[in-house]
Length: 579
Image 1 (cartoon, rainbow, N blue to C red):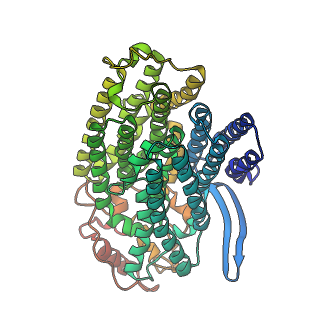
Image 2: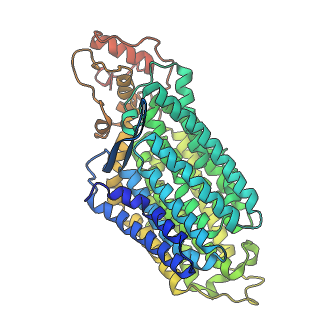
Image 3: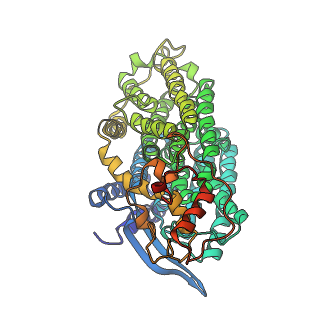
């Protein structure tokens, strides 16, 4: 396979958009857009057959040194995929392909301009998931904003301008925080490579600076996902966005926030991530419960699913910040599952809106009798969103709950109530939407799904049951990548990173985690990795950092004492110290 294959996939959509610019016929625009997305999807799925699940590093790497060179500034062009980015990369290509086909019937004006925005946005999202350095990541991150703002502002609902402005302001706020962090990291370390920074140490810098860097990335991703209380932009944007915009936003764009936590916050700032763990988990649980309760009182069916997304993505964050194998893998898998299930629901909301021209739930009812095919597909999507065993939603949610209870039994227990609340509001929604008697449906009968619409939804149903009944291929892809993030946040890894360019034990012995690839080795047990001895459910409390760094000539006993004072390992069995 040529090393440029990943770059070809990333830039194929935006190159196709240039072809659309010179087209005058609407038919040619639609065909070019659909073919571009189709080829992008085929090539992306093809990467699965060449992906080595035993390796933790980036694969399909395309590297051009000195891509940007000016004076002492040198930035490489570096793209590649690991397990988590591979799944999200393929999901992006797949959802944009379905969006392109779905747009044929629900975009009535400025069709050429719409497809240009759609293809530019696709390249931006693909680039975000494949970027191997911070500069390239930020370029693609910023490229996402304008197409999405235009899609909302031009093809959105009655209050589209307000929603587009809100999305723009929130996005720019997060971007400014992250830009400050990226520039500070570069000027302090001289590095932009994600793999290099994942094993670098910031211990020589002041603690306030380290926390500034952590929060500069954390806030950008918390706004994007969004994490409670940064969620206020999402319901309005979902409500006003066109169907395709909602599909891509819920199916792909929101996942970038969770991806950022995994790719940047934990590997770059493991000690700060561990220290913030309980606070982030509490915010995630609040989002789970609040999203469920808010969904119960909505009348617009788009807003119901928007608040449902807040709840489901809270589970993803909870799993990631459990720092357990089950929780991290479950959180990453749930990102993919949510993209499939919620993307399908938004597609179907768009289909019924084309027929009814309303999203007020009180106007519906009795659809099951008149639209049996639509109702069957919709019920499958909702049941997968609930997490019914046998569907994709169950596997990730189950792993997340195991991991979160292992991390903190109280937080995990409260999060489990979100599963019950989710079933409550979604089944209540289905009852009112599909069953009962409508005030208007008898006077205005609706046609069932067309062959085109069935063709759009059928692949999503296949993935719902494939992941639900046989998740092994997906879990194998995620396992090696999860090891990187788990091992980055361990007492041993943090202690090693305090020994800048020195032998870890001061005896010529090599470090356990000298580079990014070594982080991908099989992690130790949860208790050993984090030095937990009080309870199998509890993490130790991080205390103040030592002001001095152990000298190279320090012996093993001195190093053990240093780690003990940093991480409160008193009482840990002797053989587990320093792990």
